[in-house]
Length: 148
Ligand code: IDP
Ligand code: MG
Image 1 (tube, rainbow, N blue to C red):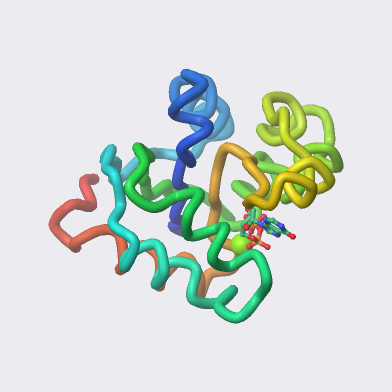
Image 2: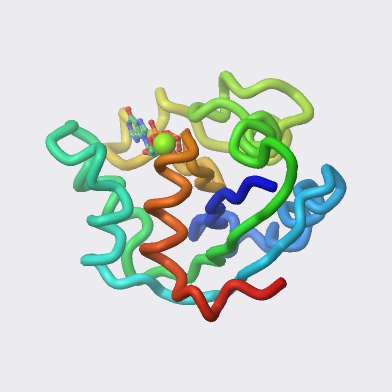
C-alpha cells in the first residue's frame, strides 16, 4: 500500500469544492488516513515548495497558499502517487484532460495567471513522486495523526 500527500488549495476551499474533490479520490479506492483543515504559515509553505525555490513563480506560489484555508490529507492505496496525479490532471487547467479534477473543475489557465502576475490556481496539490510524498507527509503530519 502506497501513501501520497494531497492538499486542496485555497481556491478549491473558497469555491466549495472540498466534497467534490474528496469524492473523486474515494471513488478511485483511495482511502483517507489523515486529514486537517488549516491556514499554513509561510515557513511551512516555503518548505513544502522548496524544490521550486529560485524559479520565477516561487514567491507567487508561496503567496497563493500561505495563511489561507487549505485541506491537507494523506491518501493510501495501490500505486497511490501515480493514480492521484492521474485523477488530478495537468498543472495548467486549460491543458488538463476532461475527467480530471483540474480539467473538469479548473477555471484558471497558465496564460491568465501569467498575465495577472500570480500562481496558476489549480485547486489541488498532489505529490509528484514517492520521495516527494514521503517528504510532504512528514512535513504536514505527525506520525500519530495518521489514522488507520
Ligand atoms: P504540480 O502542482 O502539477 O505538481 P508544479 O510544477 O510542481 O506543478 O508547480 C507547483 C504549482 O506552482 C502548480 O500547481 C501551480 O499552482 C504553480 N505553477 C507552476 N508553474 C507555474 C507557472 O509557470 N506560473 C505560475 N504558477 C505556476
Ligand atoms: Mg509538483
